[in-house]
Image (tube, rainbow, N blue to C red):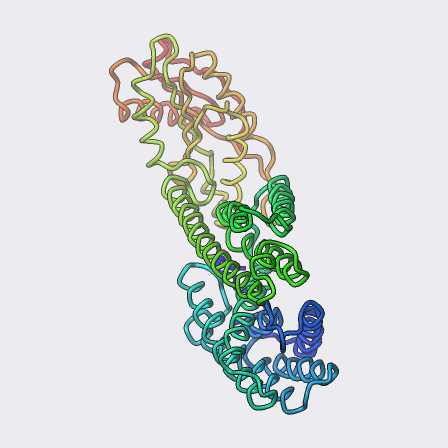
Length: 491
Protein backbone atom coordinates (compact mmCIF):
# COMPACT_ATOMS: atom_id res chain seq x y z
CA UNK A 1 0.00 0.00 0.00
CA UNK A 2 1.43 3.37 -0.92
CA UNK A 3 1.35 6.46 1.19
CA UNK A 4 -1.07 8.37 -1.02
CA UNK A 5 -3.74 5.72 -0.52
CA UNK A 6 -3.29 3.46 -3.54
CA UNK A 7 -5.13 0.21 -3.13
CA UNK A 8 -5.17 -3.28 -4.56
CA UNK A 9 -8.61 -2.33 -5.82
CA UNK A 10 -7.53 0.49 -8.13
CA UNK A 11 -7.40 1.50 -11.76
CA UNK A 12 -3.71 0.66 -11.95
CA UNK A 13 -4.17 -2.82 -10.52
CA UNK A 14 -6.25 -5.14 -12.71
CA UNK A 15 -8.80 -7.21 -10.83
CA UNK A 16 -9.04 -10.70 -12.28
CA UNK A 17 -11.70 -11.87 -9.86
CA UNK A 18 -14.82 -12.41 -11.96
CA UNK A 19 -16.96 -11.74 -8.91
CA UNK A 20 -15.50 -8.28 -8.28
CA UNK A 21 -18.12 -6.52 -10.40
CA UNK A 22 -21.17 -8.32 -8.95
CA UNK A 23 -19.78 -7.84 -5.45
CA UNK A 24 -19.38 -4.11 -6.12
CA UNK A 25 -22.94 -3.97 -7.47
CA UNK A 26 -24.34 -5.69 -4.39
CA UNK A 27 -22.26 -3.62 -1.94
CA UNK A 28 -23.13 -0.27 -3.51
CA UNK A 29 -26.81 -1.19 -3.81
CA UNK A 30 -27.06 -2.12 -0.13
CA UNK A 31 -25.07 0.91 1.06
CA UNK A 32 -27.01 3.28 -1.19
CA UNK A 33 -30.38 1.97 -0.03
CA UNK A 34 -29.33 2.09 3.62
CA UNK A 35 -28.16 5.70 3.54
CA UNK A 36 -31.02 6.83 1.31
CA UNK A 37 -33.60 5.31 3.64
CA UNK A 38 -31.81 6.82 6.64
CA UNK A 39 -32.14 10.29 5.11
CA UNK A 40 -35.78 9.63 4.21
CA UNK A 41 -36.43 8.58 7.79
CA UNK A 42 -34.79 11.65 9.30
CA UNK A 43 -36.29 14.25 6.98
CA UNK A 44 -37.93 14.09 3.55
CA UNK A 45 -35.23 15.42 1.20
CA UNK A 46 -37.80 16.40 -1.44
CA UNK A 47 -39.77 18.77 0.78
CA UNK A 48 -37.29 19.72 3.49
CA UNK A 49 -33.98 19.35 1.65
CA UNK A 50 -31.38 16.79 2.60
CA UNK A 51 -28.88 18.10 5.12
CA UNK A 52 -26.65 15.27 4.04
CA UNK A 53 -26.86 12.82 1.12
CA UNK A 54 -24.37 10.08 2.09
CA UNK A 55 -25.18 8.00 -0.99
CA UNK A 56 -23.32 10.55 -3.13
CA UNK A 57 -20.15 9.88 -1.15
CA UNK A 58 -20.61 6.11 -1.37
CA UNK A 59 -20.84 6.16 -5.16
CA UNK A 60 -17.88 8.51 -5.68
CA UNK A 61 -15.72 6.35 -3.41
CA UNK A 62 -16.83 3.16 -5.19
CA UNK A 63 -15.91 4.58 -8.61
CA UNK A 64 -12.49 5.70 -7.36
CA UNK A 65 -11.80 2.31 -5.82
CA UNK A 66 -12.78 0.30 -8.89
CA UNK A 67 -11.01 0.09 -12.25
CA UNK A 68 -12.80 2.14 -14.90
CA UNK A 69 -13.98 -0.95 -16.79
CA UNK A 70 -16.04 -1.94 -13.73
CA UNK A 71 -17.82 1.37 -13.31
CA UNK A 72 -20.88 0.01 -15.06
CA UNK A 73 -21.63 -2.16 -12.04
CA UNK A 74 -21.67 0.90 -9.76
CA UNK A 75 -23.86 2.91 -12.11
CA UNK A 76 -26.27 -0.01 -12.38
CA UNK A 77 -26.41 -0.20 -8.58
CA UNK A 78 -27.33 3.51 -8.44
CA UNK A 79 -30.15 3.01 -10.94
CA UNK A 80 -31.58 0.03 -9.06
CA UNK A 81 -31.29 1.60 -5.61
CA UNK A 82 -32.38 5.16 -6.49
CA UNK A 83 -35.18 4.33 -8.91
CA UNK A 84 -36.48 1.44 -6.82
CA UNK A 85 -36.39 3.46 -3.60
CA UNK A 86 -38.14 6.48 -5.15
CA UNK A 87 -40.92 4.41 -6.67
CA UNK A 88 -41.35 2.50 -3.42
CA UNK A 89 -41.93 5.83 -1.66
CA UNK A 90 -44.60 6.74 -4.20
CA UNK A 91 -42.78 9.50 -6.07
CA UNK A 92 -43.82 10.10 -9.71
CA UNK A 93 -42.01 8.02 -12.34
CA UNK A 94 -40.82 11.08 -14.25
CA UNK A 95 -39.32 12.63 -11.11
CA UNK A 96 -37.76 9.34 -10.08
CA UNK A 97 -36.09 8.95 -13.49
CA UNK A 98 -34.76 12.52 -13.35
CA UNK A 99 -33.33 12.06 -9.85
CA UNK A 100 -31.77 8.78 -10.92
CA UNK A 101 -30.08 10.43 -13.90
CA UNK A 102 -28.72 13.17 -11.65
CA UNK A 103 -27.37 10.67 -9.13
CA UNK A 104 -25.70 8.68 -11.92
CA UNK A 105 -24.16 11.66 -13.69
CA UNK A 106 -22.88 13.36 -10.52
CA UNK A 107 -20.38 10.71 -9.32
CA UNK A 108 -19.48 9.84 -12.90
CA UNK A 109 -18.44 13.42 -13.63
CA UNK A 110 -16.64 13.88 -10.32
CA UNK A 111 -14.71 10.59 -10.40
CA UNK A 112 -13.80 10.97 -14.09
CA UNK A 113 -12.36 14.44 -13.56
CA UNK A 114 -10.48 13.34 -10.43
CA UNK A 115 -8.92 10.43 -12.29
CA UNK A 116 -8.12 12.48 -15.42
CA UNK A 117 -6.41 15.10 -13.25
CA UNK A 118 -3.79 12.62 -12.10
CA UNK A 119 -5.42 11.44 -8.87
CA UNK A 120 -6.05 7.96 -10.23
CA UNK A 121 -6.93 6.27 -6.95
CA UNK A 122 -8.79 9.10 -5.26
CA UNK A 123 -5.92 9.77 -2.84
CA UNK A 124 -6.53 12.35 -0.11
CA UNK A 125 -2.87 13.27 0.28
CA UNK A 126 -0.60 15.04 -0.44
CA UNK A 127 -2.39 18.39 -0.47
CA UNK A 128 -2.36 18.61 -4.27
CA UNK A 129 -4.36 15.39 -4.62
CA UNK A 130 -6.73 16.38 -1.82
CA UNK A 131 -7.43 19.66 -3.62
CA UNK A 132 -8.19 17.71 -6.82
CA UNK A 133 -10.62 15.53 -4.88
CA UNK A 134 -12.31 18.56 -3.28
CA UNK A 135 -12.51 20.53 -6.53
CA UNK A 136 -14.04 17.81 -8.71
CA UNK A 137 -15.63 15.41 -6.24
CA UNK A 138 -17.09 17.90 -3.76
CA UNK A 139 -17.74 20.89 -6.03
CA UNK A 140 -18.04 20.09 -9.75
CA UNK A 141 -19.82 16.73 -9.43
CA UNK A 142 -22.49 18.00 -7.00
CA UNK A 143 -22.95 21.15 -9.12
CA UNK A 144 -23.93 18.95 -12.07
CA UNK A 145 -26.05 16.65 -9.94
CA UNK A 146 -27.84 19.54 -8.24
CA UNK A 147 -28.63 21.13 -11.58
CA UNK A 148 -30.18 17.92 -12.92
CA UNK A 149 -32.04 17.30 -9.66
CA UNK A 150 -33.38 20.82 -9.28
CA UNK A 151 -34.47 20.85 -12.92
CA UNK A 152 -36.31 17.58 -12.31
CA UNK A 153 -38.07 19.06 -9.27
CA UNK A 154 -39.07 22.08 -11.35
CA UNK A 155 -40.46 20.12 -14.31
CA UNK A 156 -41.94 17.09 -12.52
CA UNK A 157 -42.90 18.55 -9.13
CA UNK A 158 -43.42 22.25 -9.89
CA UNK A 159 -40.90 23.28 -7.19
CA UNK A 160 -38.83 26.47 -7.35
CA UNK A 161 -35.42 25.88 -8.96
CA UNK A 162 -33.81 28.68 -6.94
CA UNK A 163 -35.09 27.19 -3.68
CA UNK A 164 -34.24 23.55 -4.41
CA UNK A 165 -30.86 23.89 -6.12
CA UNK A 166 -28.82 25.23 -3.12
CA UNK A 167 -30.21 22.53 -0.80
CA UNK A 168 -29.61 19.82 -3.37
CA UNK A 169 -26.05 20.96 -3.98
CA UNK A 170 -25.16 21.39 -0.30
CA UNK A 171 -26.54 17.98 0.67
CA UNK A 172 -24.68 16.16 -2.11
CA UNK A 173 -21.45 18.10 -1.62
CA UNK A 174 -21.45 17.40 2.11
CA UNK A 175 -22.20 13.74 1.44
CA UNK A 176 -19.14 13.45 -0.81
CA UNK A 177 -16.97 15.52 1.55
CA UNK A 178 -17.77 13.40 4.59
CA UNK A 179 -18.58 9.89 3.36
CA UNK A 180 -16.15 9.38 0.46
CA UNK A 181 -13.04 10.20 2.56
CA UNK A 182 -14.27 7.87 5.30
CA UNK A 183 -14.54 5.01 2.79
CA UNK A 184 -11.24 5.85 1.06
CA UNK A 185 -9.47 6.25 4.42
CA UNK A 186 -10.11 2.62 5.33
CA UNK A 187 -7.38 1.55 2.88
CA UNK A 188 -4.82 4.01 4.25
CA UNK A 189 -1.94 2.97 6.46
CA UNK A 190 -2.54 3.59 10.15
CA UNK A 191 -0.38 6.28 11.74
CA UNK A 192 0.64 3.81 14.42
CA UNK A 193 -0.63 5.87 17.36
CA UNK A 194 -1.23 3.97 20.57
CA UNK A 195 -4.56 2.36 21.29
CA UNK A 196 -4.77 4.49 24.39
CA UNK A 197 -4.60 7.73 22.43
CA UNK A 198 -7.07 6.40 19.87
CA UNK A 199 -9.51 5.50 22.65
CA UNK A 200 -8.97 8.87 24.32
CA UNK A 201 -9.75 10.78 21.13
CA UNK A 202 -12.85 8.66 20.52
CA UNK A 203 -14.19 9.08 24.07
CA UNK A 204 -13.46 12.81 24.23
CA UNK A 205 -15.00 13.41 20.79
CA UNK A 206 -18.12 11.41 21.65
CA UNK A 207 -18.52 13.31 24.91
CA UNK A 208 -18.11 16.67 23.21
CA UNK A 209 -20.59 15.67 20.49
CA UNK A 210 -23.10 14.86 23.20
CA UNK A 211 -22.52 18.28 24.76
CA UNK A 212 -22.53 20.22 21.49
CA UNK A 213 -25.69 18.72 20.03
CA UNK A 214 -27.77 19.35 23.13
CA UNK A 215 -30.27 22.15 23.75
CA UNK A 216 -28.07 24.64 25.53
CA UNK A 217 -29.93 27.82 24.71
CA UNK A 218 -28.94 31.27 25.86
CA UNK A 219 -25.57 32.86 25.01
CA UNK A 220 -23.88 29.47 24.54
CA UNK A 221 -25.93 28.70 21.45
CA UNK A 222 -23.48 30.21 18.94
CA UNK A 223 -20.30 29.01 20.60
CA UNK A 224 -20.73 25.34 21.52
CA UNK A 225 -20.21 23.98 17.96
CA UNK A 226 -16.62 25.26 18.06
CA UNK A 227 -15.86 22.80 20.86
CA UNK A 228 -15.56 20.19 18.08
CA UNK A 229 -12.61 21.98 16.46
CA UNK A 230 -9.99 20.86 19.05
CA UNK A 231 -11.06 17.26 18.44
CA UNK A 232 -10.70 17.60 14.66
CA UNK A 233 -7.35 19.38 15.13
CA UNK A 234 -6.17 16.60 17.44
CA UNK A 235 -7.17 14.04 14.83
CA UNK A 236 -5.46 16.01 12.04
CA UNK A 237 -2.12 16.47 13.79
CA UNK A 238 -1.87 13.04 15.41
CA UNK A 239 -3.87 10.72 13.15
CA UNK A 240 -3.65 12.45 9.79
CA UNK A 241 -6.17 12.34 6.97
CA UNK A 242 -7.38 8.90 8.00
CA UNK A 243 -8.22 10.06 11.51
CA UNK A 244 -9.99 13.23 10.38
CA UNK A 245 -12.02 11.37 7.74
CA UNK A 246 -13.36 8.81 10.21
CA UNK A 247 -13.99 11.34 12.98
CA UNK A 248 -15.70 13.80 10.61
CA UNK A 249 -18.01 11.02 9.42
CA UNK A 250 -19.06 10.25 13.00
CA UNK A 251 -19.57 13.91 13.92
CA UNK A 252 -21.58 14.58 10.77
CA UNK A 253 -23.89 11.62 11.25
CA UNK A 254 -24.54 12.59 14.89
CA UNK A 255 -25.08 16.24 13.99
CA UNK A 256 -27.39 15.45 11.09
CA UNK A 257 -29.54 13.11 13.17
CA UNK A 258 -29.84 15.39 16.21
CA UNK A 259 -30.60 18.45 14.08
CA UNK A 260 -33.28 16.54 12.18
CA UNK A 261 -34.91 15.75 15.54
CA UNK A 262 -34.79 19.37 16.60
CA UNK A 263 -31.92 18.99 19.03
CA UNK A 264 -28.74 21.04 19.26
CA UNK A 265 -27.68 24.60 18.52
CA UNK A 266 -28.42 24.51 14.79
CA UNK A 267 -32.01 23.33 15.27
CA UNK A 268 -32.58 26.01 17.91
CA UNK A 269 -31.01 28.78 15.87
CA UNK A 270 -32.80 27.78 12.67
CA UNK A 271 -36.19 27.70 14.30
CA UNK A 272 -39.30 27.14 12.23
CA UNK A 273 -37.79 28.73 9.11
CA UNK A 274 -35.94 25.53 8.21
CA UNK A 275 -32.55 27.23 8.14
CA UNK A 276 -31.12 24.77 10.68
CA UNK A 277 -30.08 22.37 7.90
CA UNK A 278 -28.26 25.12 5.99
CA UNK A 279 -26.45 26.30 9.11
CA UNK A 280 -25.34 22.76 9.92
CA UNK A 281 -24.16 22.24 6.33
CA UNK A 282 -22.05 25.42 6.36
CA UNK A 283 -20.44 24.58 9.70
CA UNK A 284 -19.62 21.01 8.71
CA UNK A 285 -18.37 21.93 5.24
CA UNK A 286 -15.94 24.52 6.60
CA UNK A 287 -14.71 22.53 9.60
CA UNK A 288 -14.30 19.22 7.76
CA UNK A 289 -12.59 20.65 4.66
CA UNK A 290 -10.18 22.76 6.75
CA UNK A 291 -9.41 19.77 8.99
CA UNK A 292 -8.70 17.57 5.98
CA UNK A 293 -6.33 20.17 4.54
CA UNK A 294 -4.56 20.49 7.90
CA UNK A 295 -4.29 16.70 8.13
CA UNK A 296 -2.88 16.45 4.61
CA UNK A 297 -0.24 19.04 5.48
CA UNK A 298 0.59 17.21 8.72
CA UNK A 299 0.86 13.90 6.87
CA UNK A 300 3.11 15.51 4.28
CA UNK A 301 5.45 16.96 6.89
CA UNK A 302 5.53 13.67 8.80
CA UNK A 303 6.30 11.68 5.66
CA UNK A 304 8.94 14.23 4.64
CA UNK A 305 10.59 13.88 8.05
CA UNK A 306 10.53 10.08 7.78
CA UNK A 307 12.02 10.23 4.28
CA UNK A 308 14.79 12.54 5.42
CA UNK A 309 15.48 10.24 8.35
CA UNK A 310 15.72 7.26 5.98
CA UNK A 311 18.13 9.23 3.77
CA UNK A 312 20.25 10.22 6.79
CA UNK A 313 20.36 6.61 7.93
CA UNK A 314 21.29 5.37 4.45
CA UNK A 315 24.07 7.97 4.26
CA UNK A 316 25.59 6.97 7.59
CA UNK A 317 24.96 3.22 7.78
CA UNK A 318 26.02 0.16 5.84
CA UNK A 319 23.09 -1.01 3.65
CA UNK A 320 23.86 -4.72 4.09
CA UNK A 321 24.38 -5.00 7.84
CA UNK A 322 22.82 -1.79 9.14
CA UNK A 323 26.01 -0.99 11.04
CA UNK A 324 27.65 2.42 11.18
CA UNK A 325 29.65 3.05 7.98
CA UNK A 326 33.13 4.55 7.55
CA UNK A 327 31.85 8.09 7.13
CA UNK A 328 29.93 8.18 10.40
CA UNK A 329 32.72 6.29 12.19
CA UNK A 330 35.16 9.06 11.24
CA UNK A 331 32.77 11.68 12.60
CA UNK A 332 32.29 9.79 15.86
CA UNK A 333 36.04 9.25 16.20
CA UNK A 334 36.80 12.94 15.70
CA UNK A 335 34.33 13.78 18.43
CA UNK A 336 35.52 11.04 20.79
CA UNK A 337 39.30 11.55 20.62
CA UNK A 338 39.28 14.82 22.64
CA UNK A 339 37.35 13.01 25.41
CA UNK A 340 39.95 10.26 25.70
CA UNK A 341 41.86 10.25 29.03
CA UNK A 342 45.14 8.70 30.15
CA UNK A 343 43.47 6.40 32.69
CA UNK A 344 40.57 5.36 30.48
CA UNK A 345 41.57 6.00 26.88
CA UNK A 346 39.52 5.35 23.81
CA UNK A 347 40.24 1.91 22.35
CA UNK A 348 39.88 1.00 18.69
CA UNK A 349 39.54 -2.64 17.64
CA UNK A 350 40.03 -3.59 13.98
CA UNK A 351 38.36 -6.88 13.03
CA UNK A 352 38.82 -8.90 9.86
CA UNK A 353 37.15 -12.24 9.12
CA UNK A 354 39.59 -15.04 8.40
CA UNK A 355 39.37 -16.76 5.00
CA UNK A 356 36.27 -14.78 3.98
CA UNK A 357 37.27 -14.95 0.32
CA UNK A 358 36.96 -18.73 0.51
CA UNK A 359 33.32 -18.36 1.56
CA UNK A 360 32.53 -16.22 -1.49
CA UNK A 361 34.47 -18.53 -3.82
CA UNK A 362 32.96 -21.75 -2.45
CA UNK A 363 29.37 -20.80 -1.70
CA UNK A 364 28.83 -17.56 -3.64
CA UNK A 365 28.36 -13.92 -2.73
CA UNK A 366 24.84 -14.49 -1.36
CA UNK A 367 26.34 -16.79 1.26
CA UNK A 368 29.06 -14.22 1.97
CA UNK A 369 26.46 -11.50 2.47
CA UNK A 370 24.48 -13.71 4.81
CA UNK A 371 27.61 -14.44 6.84
CA UNK A 372 28.41 -10.72 7.12
CA UNK A 373 24.91 -9.98 8.40
CA UNK A 374 25.15 -12.75 11.00
CA UNK A 375 28.59 -11.59 12.15
CA UNK A 376 27.38 -7.98 12.40
CA UNK A 377 24.45 -9.01 14.58
CA UNK A 378 26.69 -11.09 16.82
CA UNK A 379 29.15 -8.25 17.28
CA UNK A 380 26.42 -5.80 18.20
CA UNK A 381 24.98 -8.23 20.75
CA UNK A 382 28.40 -8.74 22.39
CA UNK A 383 29.48 -5.13 22.90
CA UNK A 384 28.27 -2.67 25.54
CA UNK A 385 25.37 -0.25 24.87
CA UNK A 386 27.67 2.77 24.33
CA UNK A 387 30.17 0.95 22.11
CA UNK A 388 30.09 1.51 18.35
CA UNK A 389 30.30 -1.31 15.80
CA UNK A 390 31.07 -0.25 12.23
CA UNK A 391 31.62 -2.00 8.92
CA UNK A 392 34.19 -0.06 6.95
CA UNK A 393 34.63 -2.34 3.91
CA UNK A 394 34.20 -5.92 2.75
CA UNK A 395 34.75 -8.15 5.77
CA UNK A 396 36.41 -5.46 7.90
CA UNK A 397 34.70 -4.26 11.07
CA UNK A 398 35.70 -1.71 13.70
CA UNK A 399 34.80 -1.56 17.39
CA UNK A 400 34.99 1.86 19.05
CA UNK A 401 35.22 1.53 22.84
CA UNK A 402 35.00 4.87 24.64
CA UNK A 403 36.36 5.63 28.12
CA UNK A 404 37.68 2.07 28.48
CA UNK A 405 40.71 0.76 30.32
CA UNK A 406 42.92 -2.01 28.95
CA UNK A 407 41.29 -4.80 30.96
CA UNK A 408 37.78 -3.85 29.90
CA UNK A 409 38.86 -3.54 26.25
CA UNK A 410 40.21 -7.07 26.45
CA UNK A 411 36.98 -8.35 28.00
CA UNK A 412 34.90 -6.78 25.25
CA UNK A 413 37.20 -8.23 22.59
CA UNK A 414 36.86 -11.67 24.23
CA UNK A 415 33.07 -11.47 24.16
CA UNK A 416 33.01 -10.39 20.53
CA UNK A 417 35.34 -13.18 19.46
CA UNK A 418 33.34 -15.79 21.41
CA UNK A 419 30.14 -14.56 19.74
CA UNK A 420 31.65 -14.60 16.25
CA UNK A 421 32.98 -18.17 16.31
CA UNK A 422 29.58 -19.81 16.70
CA UNK A 423 28.42 -22.03 13.79
CA UNK A 424 26.63 -20.25 10.94
CA UNK A 425 24.20 -22.00 8.60
CA UNK A 426 24.49 -20.64 5.06
CA UNK A 427 21.50 -20.29 2.69
CA UNK A 428 22.36 -23.57 0.96
CA UNK A 429 22.28 -25.48 4.23
CA UNK A 430 26.05 -25.79 4.77
CA UNK A 431 27.40 -24.90 8.19
CA UNK A 432 30.70 -23.07 8.75
CA UNK A 433 32.49 -21.87 11.89
CA UNK A 434 33.93 -18.40 11.17
CA UNK A 435 36.87 -16.84 12.96
CA UNK A 436 38.13 -13.29 13.21
CA UNK A 437 41.48 -11.59 13.69
CA UNK A 438 41.36 -8.54 15.95
CA UNK A 439 43.84 -5.74 16.56
CA UNK A 440 43.47 -3.42 19.56
CA UNK A 441 44.98 0.03 19.93
CA UNK A 442 44.56 2.51 22.79
CA UNK A 443 44.51 6.20 21.99
CA UNK A 444 47.55 8.14 23.17
CA UNK A 445 47.41 11.78 24.18
CA UNK A 446 47.92 14.03 21.16
CA UNK A 447 47.57 11.16 18.68
CA UNK A 448 45.51 11.72 15.55
CA UNK A 449 42.71 9.52 14.29
CA UNK A 450 44.68 8.32 11.26
CA UNK A 451 47.59 7.12 13.39
CA UNK A 452 45.27 5.39 15.85
CA UNK A 453 43.52 3.48 13.06
CA UNK A 454 46.86 2.59 11.46
CA UNK A 455 48.15 1.05 14.72
CA UNK A 456 44.96 -0.97 15.20
CA UNK A 457 45.21 -2.13 11.60
CA UNK A 458 48.83 -3.17 12.05
CA UNK A 459 47.90 -5.20 15.16
CA UNK A 460 45.08 -6.92 13.29
CA UNK A 461 47.44 -7.98 10.49
CA UNK A 462 49.90 -9.34 13.06
CA UNK A 463 47.05 -11.42 14.50
CA UNK A 464 46.32 -12.80 11.02
CA UNK A 465 50.03 -13.53 10.46
CA UNK A 466 50.06 -15.56 13.67
CA UNK A 467 47.32 -17.82 12.31
CA UNK A 468 44.18 -15.73 12.86
CA UNK A 469 41.43 -16.31 15.35
CA UNK A 470 43.10 -14.15 18.00
CA UNK A 471 43.35 -10.67 19.52
CA UNK A 472 46.64 -8.75 19.15
CA UNK A 473 47.45 -5.55 21.06
CA UNK A 474 49.45 -2.69 19.59
CA UNK A 475 53.22 -2.70 20.32
CA UNK A 476 52.92 0.92 21.37
CA UNK A 477 50.45 -0.01 24.12
CA UNK A 478 52.44 -2.97 25.60
CA UNK A 479 56.20 -3.01 26.16
CA UNK A 480 56.17 -6.75 25.36
CA UNK A 481 53.87 -6.32 22.36
CA UNK A 482 52.10 -9.43 23.60
CA UNK A 483 48.93 -11.11 22.62
CA UNK A 484 46.05 -10.18 24.90
CA UNK A 485 44.06 -13.33 24.18
CA UNK A 486 44.15 -16.08 21.61
CA UNK A 487 41.35 -18.40 20.59
CA UNK A 488 41.84 -21.05 17.98
CA UNK A 489 38.82 -20.50 15.79
CA UNK A 490 39.97 -21.09 12.29
CA UNK A 491 37.28 -21.73 9.72
